[in-house]
Picture 1 (cartoon, rainbow over the protein chains, first blue to last red):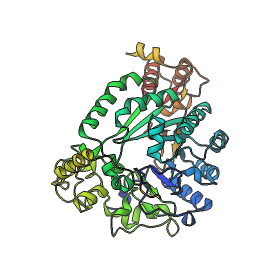
Picture 2 (cartoon, one colour; picture 1 turned 180 degrees about the horizontal axis):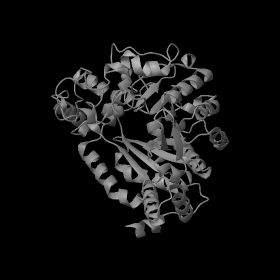
Picture 3 (tube, rainbow over the protein chains, first blue to last red; picture 1 turned 45 degrees about the vertical axis):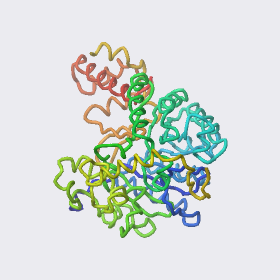
Picture 4 (cartoon, helix red, strand yellow; picture 1 turned 90 degrees about the vertical axis):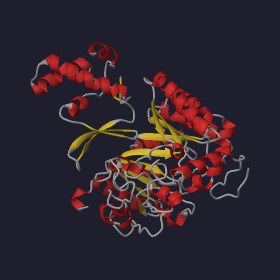
Length: 366
Length: 95
């Protein structure tokens, strides 16, 4: 692929820190977390935001870990906003009060995405591993709406809460959110580690999907409902990241630039850092981004598939984890020779005894 | 059905919280940015969107557009209402 043919990214996930007071068992951070001493400082992030905007990135998602764990969060929002980026804060709300939120709004924050772990407080706090968290989140959501900021509620669904998808939508509407994201857990990183405890049954997934479609029209004039599909039970893979190195990039707390959250699980990929390279060069030339860009890397059945530029072969990390080869078709695809085994794994995990979560950074408990 | 659309349009349209119009220098186009949404606008769309600031009525927006494009008002009115109705359906417009 010639350099001229490489379109610039639209979005950037800025993982400002891996520190987080919560410990959700499906956390998308890697199993090996980067520590505070390695984090990019304010000036380095400001430069990254300028480079991103300069190359065509339109939206930055300020994430973590918990981005509020950064004391310079307001300065970072100012830097991103001044660079011309649409700023989205992805937060658990822990560490943010109404006064700090007002400063973020003043700094130019465009949108807040708040996670809820469940609609039932005791269950939510158990899932997050953080007593009292749910009540604080509800109070924060109200503050977001009161201050006139746009709010999305993000709900990761799995075996412990999947029976309450309709209630998630209702709580989002009652809080005044403009959008709710019902995201079936994606099994990478911590979620893969906790798959036996998280995986819902086929019947639970089918029921949840049906319920969501039934209630959707009721909210048409109030709420955008977005769905991240449960791909262990799918027939076709999702276009992971909209295609590798095609629409977005991910900067880790220490400045490593990844094509997706989980890309570091693929061995032998060479990642470049913003400490050593400018962002446009990383996007265009770094080996990790070039590895699976486009379709030339594909093997069968993807190579000759008519959908190869629709789903881009699905997820590379999932192909590696389940098919043993990052170039293989994502086993979520029914054309993959590993598809049956993926379904069997889901059935087996979901039928197992309920077990305790392995929380990031903490000893296992029930 | 323009009549139904008209009934659902806000009186003084403005972009919903979290939605803003941005000129994308890289792609040389006006884009509408919202939560997890990037909508590229074409032709007169950005002229309409720039006027959705909560101070103008739909009729005022139509009048101004008719002036800018020196076109028949009825035609412009249909286009404006159709576009605003689409944005209402996408929850990107408030009033």
